[in-house]
Length: 547
Image (cartoon, rainbow, N blue to C red; front, side):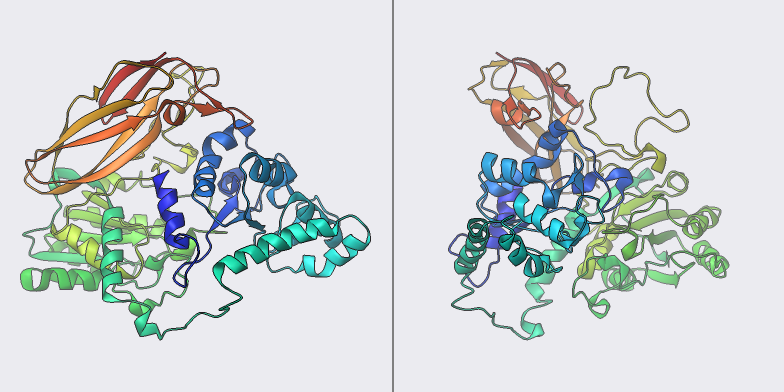
């Protein structure tokens, strides 16, 4: 959980807080992403063991790292909304995990207890949220209007009020808000789009872009003279910022088209045709796009989702691209030209109908203000792609939910959808490179360990290609037999390293039994059982025993 520690330190620094840091808030506690049908704000039904297994670990790690605040979520947990859930806010968060910081509701979260059917009016909503442990009421001001009456009615005590106020004031003191309640506001030119910051976000964007497909090594486009740039994203400067762009301004975004022009200079000739809009049924530019493709050596086709098609309150029943975009792919494919699909989206997209028609696919997600230079660098070969999928790409929407660490089933040879392929289109951790890597067998420091011993595992990776690259090694553990059924495999550690062409690098994973081999029960208690375990890296697997 080193990532959570780094994130909390990035926000908060080390106490006492200084003017360059803020209090971190963990959201949304808990199980918010598990709402029925993937629809925001609706009911969530998760087993307690599932909560401890999947959803609690990042909260525990962040609390241990010193996170100052936590936001309750909208969703129900076992029928009780998080904002009014005494068990998960008090019994678990306060008592079991020892969280001392303040708890804040989500936006109008207390008022919405009424629409969730657990409070008949403002007064009851206020009582249930406050009594459950929610310290701060965000926006709806029910606390301001109702708490005094609840104290008079002796439903809430002044001691409870004092506890909540104490947590709030303590954080304000630690943040220095009483000594210096206002920050120094610098002019925009000294705060935003600074050269070093642009370089940083370009590097982040570069390493998150994933080369999903590269048939016959059509990429990189190193000696290509005529390139057709087609698609609604080619000159887009808005949707690439995503739905939570904040103060991002389209005028500051360099479109993909401009990035390609700058990247290649006079080394290639470009012809741009939009081809179609993001959606709708206007095919008037299809023929112009077709003719441009015929004149080109290769087509770079920029498709994807509008910013608000994903993100909060953007639930959709289908993950495929709009029909107009798929039709454009099919139309251009009839030219017989090589097609490189650049896909911008805030989530996996269903590509089953168009994936066979294109030669390469680069998932760029929503790279923001400075995504064009990294993408152009990947297409030209200046940058060797190194991103790996953090989520599974389903073959079809109907396969959802589909993920790599599913539980073992009663009949693994049955229970599959009959009308689509069994596996995903692109699995978790998939990502191609312009070079090749060769993995050695996994070596263990010993084959048998006790519950108090550590086990060191190593694997060497050789860059067998002609390009320098960055390779991420994913360490998975499989526990085939346990008192509570375990997933078919679980990611326990990953590490990314630079490997020069011809160089061999060693990756090491130190297994701590309690941390890496145990699992929680429905109360959060860790269970560590003896038995056989399997450690897997790429296509290599080795067995060891815990005694």
